[in-house]
Length: 225
Image 1: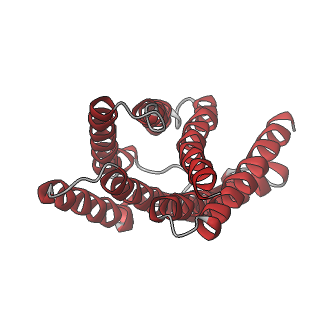
Image 2: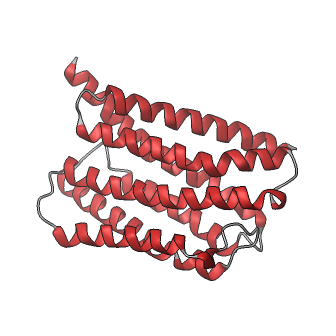
Image 3: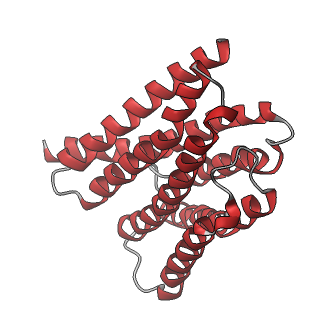
């Protein structure tokens, strides 16, 4: 009961908060393309996670996680897709914000990793509808996702240092933390279920990313006013 209460409070606050902020940035960005991209990214984050978190909340309050394995698996599948697109949008935010020209090879790499990741998620061997899913495919489908994360960390770190940017100075750290909390869950949560709690700080790392976009939004509002 305690787990259900804590997770429900956290999940509801997270979903309502991140989607609301995303809608505000997407609709009130005053033609600021980067802000609107952040808004879309935040909406995608919250909407995608809702497909997994809402069934999880229901399961915790009713018949348990195993009895709702199919709904949880479908939600996990959808979240895997939306998070991949999340990082692709973040890549284009990096390009626009730091006025990056060229680097076509990097763009092709990000698109290729996105396609590979989604293709791997679509394979039936993932057994999304099963409660115990194959560890091998859990690792395989996350390899291109992890490479995308590493690319985001490196390119933001390089430009932040070069341009002494204040708004995105913690972007590399936030993305690093999100993967740092996520990897143990992928590798060991089936044998140590309590590791699933690491998804809370992982989610907070993503909220941190969204808040950087919110900071940019507030800055643009002050300039326009």
